[in-house]
Image (cartoon, rainbow, N blue to C red; front, side):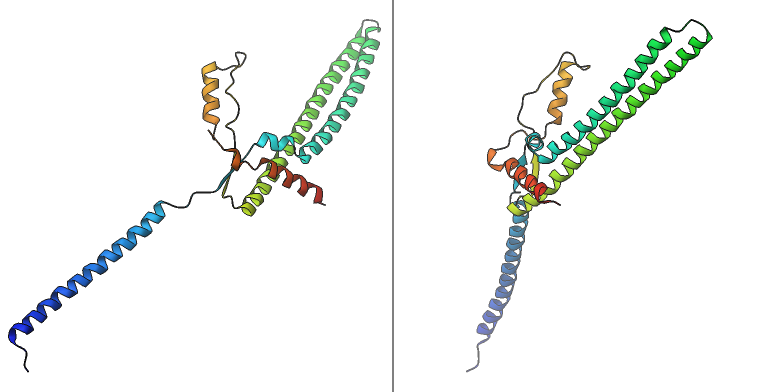
Amino acid sequence: MAAKPGDVMMSNTRTRIFFPAAALALCVLAIITYETVAVRGLFAPPTAVATIDISKVIDKLNEQAEWEIQISSLQAGIQEEAETRQSRLIERIQEVEKMEQGSEQDAAIDELELERRRLEEWARLKQMEVDRERSLMWQSIYRNIKAEAAKLAKSEGYELVLIDDSPGELIASRDANMPIEQQILTQIQARRVIYAANTIDITEKLVIRMNNARTTSP
């Protein structure tokens, strides 16, 4: 039985309506998918953060205690040598004071002045030596804190470790060469953490890890 002209026209019309509707549905689906991905990008998972009290870490480190013993020994040796040098200089001064006035005494006084300057220069160099050792100590401690904090963070799933500087009040001194207001503002600007919960503090874990690593290292 042949289709009537009206039936053919209706079928063509439905076909034309169906295809645009299907295309529209696909476009809507694509837009929804894109927006979903975009929203997920905007709302990324929160970063896992941990904090440390670096003062407590340093105070409890075996490495810091070892460095202090080494530096104290260096300072004691310098102090002993300084006292010996100073005693010799004092003895020489007393000898020169007993000399008769004249060219010989004048030459001896000049020699004493030269010796005094040498002693001052020696003391300055030794002070620099102690300062250099203390600088090496802090560099070593900080380098090891960074390394072990990174290992601890990776093992426990933290992505960021901060130094918690929120504890402690702002302190100003009238003896400082800076207005009190400026002292307070400087401290505020230097702060990086306003609040940190104790639950994210890994200070003790880091100390234990670092001291254990120090014990087992060759």
